Length: 190
Image (cartoon, rainbow, N blue to C red; front, side):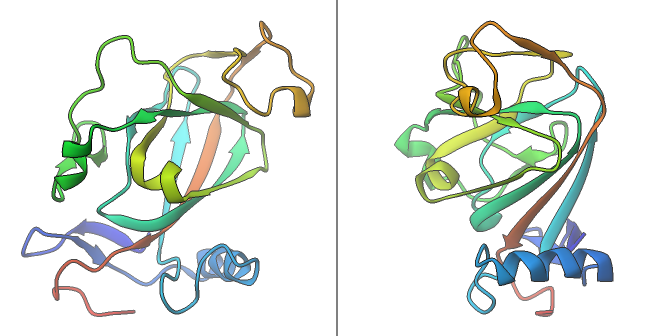
């Protein structure tokens, strides 16, 4: 919601008004200081549903969104992975959407690339990331039916998990809230 389809010129996504209930969520995040109400207000909410064995390909949100992402997780837990810093040449890429993976297009990671760190997203949790994590590191969720806790899971001990533990996934719904950057004049400011 907030950005449904590619605009007529092809350089951005069309902006739409958010439904009232999503506006309430966005307002709450604004009150918490997650999004700046004037410079970079949250104006896009993407709702994804994942069954066990589904994930999202490692990607970066820029240059489509900026300067942070807020993810509310509902239903099952899952591991959210951050990958090593990208090659500097990748940062010069323009907007291109990968229709098969439903993420901004970037070259594939080298085979065998492992997450630099992972966060266990618990049901009802809010993850906010910005800065270096948002701009330079791909993020994604591995398409597995069970999450294996490894040493890269930074919050494992805090939530009572140990290396070697495994958690079976169930259905998970996520609300990913971001600021869609205007890249053209096709869409009026909302």
